[in-house]
Length: 163
Ligand code: PNS
Image (cartoon, rainbow, N blue to C red; front, side, top):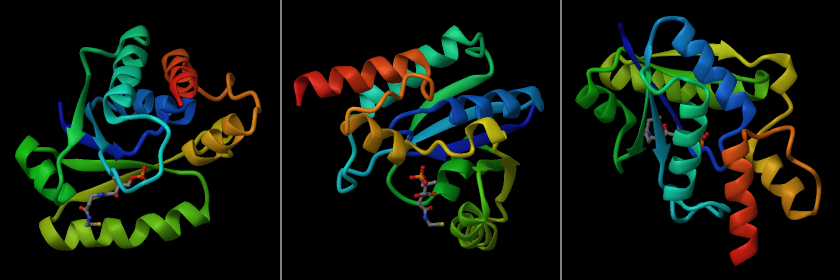
């Protein structure tokens, strides 16, 4: 079984992220979800809240045996991949805009350490969903309940209660 790293902010972890995780597992991979910690990035959820929501989602989905949740350490993603012995990075592509953002990073990771990035095309049911738009819609009072797994929705609501 090969190990792949699925990195991201996951602020919050959406149904699109869940679909990506399921599909990487279905391809036969052990998936390490690496949650980035960027205190300077204006986010809604703290690192632990995001990790807990992902862990609960993965557990409820029956993927705990194939999926591990880790904090992405400060430093290069490729160093983390090397430390894990990971074979590749997995990222989802919703559109050409995502590709424009991802391509230089994927090329750089390959240049630095020979780490390849495997891109999975986002299912069209989720291609309009991004964590940032979910945060915005939620902050403005919109309904995001059909875009998030239950634990992410709970975490978002809990964060709103304390802010
Ligand atoms: O969900 P996001 O916010 O688009 O995730 C971005 C992430 C975490 C994948 C990206 O910031 C990243 O790869 N960070 C690791 C830092 C790094 O290795 N940078 C240099 C090579 S591109």
